[in-house]
Length: 232
Image (cartoon, rainbow, N blue to C red; front, side, top):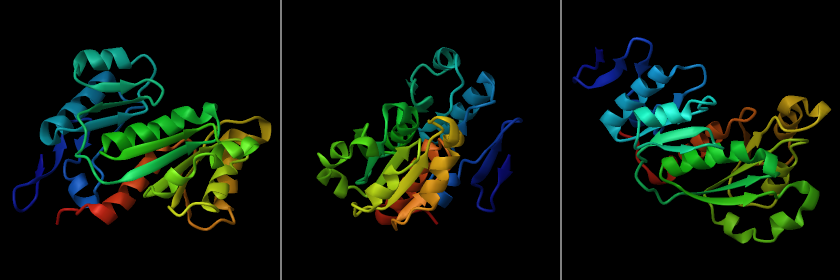
């Protein structure tokens, strides 16, 4: 275990992992477990440590077949199958609201990862599903509530056009998430990624392919800068 000069732990050494228990104080985002390629024992040990200290722990990208084993070890945990995410507890409720839009139903797992993360972080989430550019009337039908959000996360595969459209209409900042959904030249999400990066609509930030968690973390940072105070 490493200690700071005033005796507060900077990280806890669990052998395979050094748990950064002060990350939320520094950055407003607590350490989150990326579960892919980790063992059940590693995931459980890190989550127990985080939950014991802070009353909150979140794991993303839970491997297939792990959920029942994790829930047996962590019986109070909440698991979302489509989001592939699991949490213990949740952070305090904030005044923040984030809109999450996804172009097609096939993009839902990525959108769900973002929503699960934001709700675990204490934010209200407004959802719009299947509002892609193939039928823009679906997006415009109930757009006004989205204008009151603190940020919008827009998830799209194929040609990745939806974030540009939304950013051209919306007051809140847009966080674009390309997904790996699409045929042939969609190239596993790279076409959508490049389209979002090349957008002519200002006010867009772009995260990595399929990175719903990363989009949620950025939205949380925006809300924290507006409403929350990071500890010294």
